Amino acid sequence: METHDITVIGGGLVGSALALGLAEAGQRVLVLDGEDLARRASRANFGLVWVSGKGLGAPDYARWSFESARLWPGFARDLEARSGVSLALDQPGGYSFALSPQELDGIVTDMTRITEETGGDGAPWRLVPRAELEREIPGIGPDVAGAVHGSADGHLNALRLFHALHRAGAAAGVTYRARHTVSHIEPGAESFRLRGDWGEITTPRVVLAAGTATEALAPMVGLAAPLKHSRGQIVVTERVSGRLPFLSAIIRQTDEGSVMIGDSDEGDTEALSGNPEIAALLGARAIRVYPALARLNVVRSWTGFRVKPRDGIPIYGQSTSCPGAYVVLCHSGVTLAAQHALRIAPQIAAGAAQIGPSAFSSARFHVPA
Ligand SMILES: Cc1cc2nc3c(=O)[nH]c(=O)nc-3n(C[C@H](O)[C@H](O)[C@H](O)COP(=O)(O)OP(=O)(O)OC[C@H]3O[C@@H](n4cnc5c(N)ncnc54)[C@H](O)[C@@H]3O)c2cc1C
Picture 1: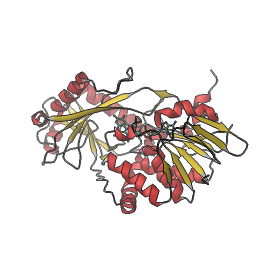
Picture 2 (picture 1 turned 30 degrees about the vertical axis):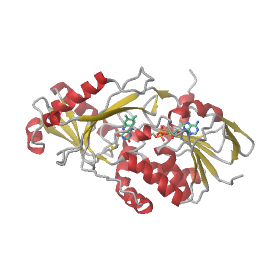
Picture 3 (picture 1 turned 180 degrees about the horizontal axis):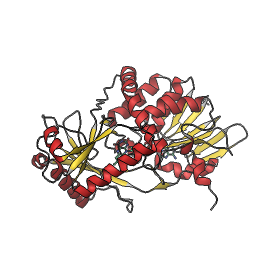
Picture 4 (picture 1 turned 180 degrees about the vertical axis):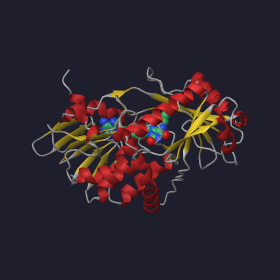
């Protein structure tokens, strides 16, 4: 019999950032997580703290991502101090490269729209014509027509972020239970009964942060979290001592020297094993952007399933039919980890009806046909 104020279902990047923030807000937190080999987007991602291009047609999402990027330096310092784990956060700004004038026009049109929709509150960016790009990135490929540079973009070591959140959570008093997959949630008058093949517990409040499994859990507490199927694949090269002179959403060098190349989007497969044809396409595009990459050996490749809301916008909210049940789900759990720990968790701790911007409410999916 354990006494906790709140139970977080899911110990991925989203659940562990929330658990840390909830513990910091004075809550006694229990995290129930899945099996060791569970599919976790948190172990498969590209490690970007990325803002550029996010929130087209959804200005709250654009602002939310930008604010997270600004929270990151302080959040990283604090997390490193608490966990003793270096995150290698670097926010030098990032390039979105275009391989044709048409592609460049498309990127600029989208970025201009985001700036207009946010009324200027979005992340700063600038167009980098081909001639300028040659000066900024010596060795840029001849096929690159130009780029957009977003000054808020950055990256970090995502596996160490995951480790740091768990370590800092444990130090803050979070109780973590692996191999505790929750199969049923039964709402009661004043508590929720959570069951699995490990047994059952009751909890006064519950947060659904189980990644792609949230879609099936949400209706048990009157919430909706419809997802879009999306598999991403990443290719990784051997480590090199020199530094790549740029960061982009498709090519980045880790602090340990490897070059990561991504990132694809397949909607029609459940398979975990990578597709060599996709790896070849990713590699070919990366070499067109920066031909020197052709000299590197690929040492591994992996796939991961995104936690992608159907409309691409985070889903945050408290159930109206089962008060005390919350959902937190998003497509960019690395980028938004700072928001989740510093903004969302205190709002859940305080019992707020809507957490985060109201445009992110799960109620948007309850529109009668
Ligand atoms: C290829 C790829 C590249 C990406 N690149 C980036 C990037 O560059 N930047 C960025 O910000 N984001 C990126 N993402 C997205 C990011 O990785 C995810 O948003 C984030 O990891 C989601 O975390 P999560 O905790 O919601 O889900 P997960 O990591 O999937 O974790 C869910 C957890 O819930 C547990 N669980 C599942 N079901 C249950 C249950 N019934 N009971 C108890 N526990 C359960 C699982 O065991 C797991 O630990 C990328 C994703 C992919 C796939």
